[in-house]
Length: 312
Image (cartoon, rainbow, N blue to C red; front, side, top):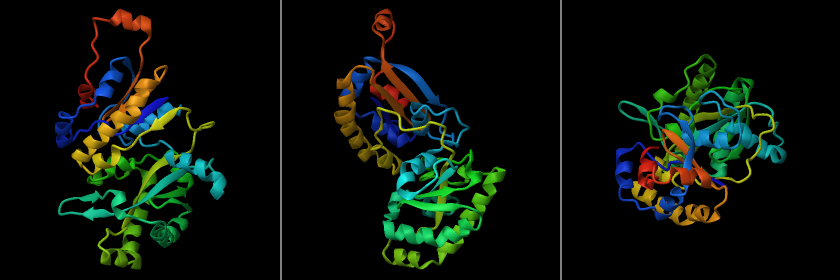
């Protein structure tokens, strides 16, 4: 079993302050018998957040340029039989979003705040579909907040993961290289088309955020022979409270995680692995060999869970 925990740590000052009062006894106990093995990431400015890098590594994907991990193609492969998709093609993931225009920046509102259902999502998709199809894209609905797009230009196209952009100024995360100029133009056309669309009139009347843009991520072609890695589990219960900057809810989610999956991992023993992911790095821990542990006894002390999470 290999458990991956996104947003286990944060660079937010408020979040780091909340961490100081968080007791995680089962994580402390688990870390006491594990050793750090693989460390991925460098800082909070990479296009792919550490949890995406960790998942790609756990699945055995070959190294890819930053921002070019083909999660959309993986989703297309999962839906291929049901929807008749060609998973061998390059794919990208389009997320319908609300861009909030402030006085000095444009930020991306958390997509779950849209409260999109299947019907409204399909209506928005059908509205923007001609814009993309005119440029050779093929679009398929996967979920209310997930539209799959296929086009040759998406093969290896580097884009920022959605989790990098939520709640932040989008300027630094917009793709600026040559192949992405078409994406920037399509984003602008989508915004103009949806600005006066009836679905947004209804949403405004209901007090809901408008659907006024899309975000492209997870582009590329699935590596040959790629499939779901056996035993890899991603527990993302910390994601929404972290991106909402609701640190009380984040702490509550951590306590539940500690009492549930972390405790189960501690009881599993054997070759169980744990990867804790922050906004800068992902650190994987694995059981220490008995001989090595004996040699290191007295010379190396496992840091507390709090110290480990602060370093992410």
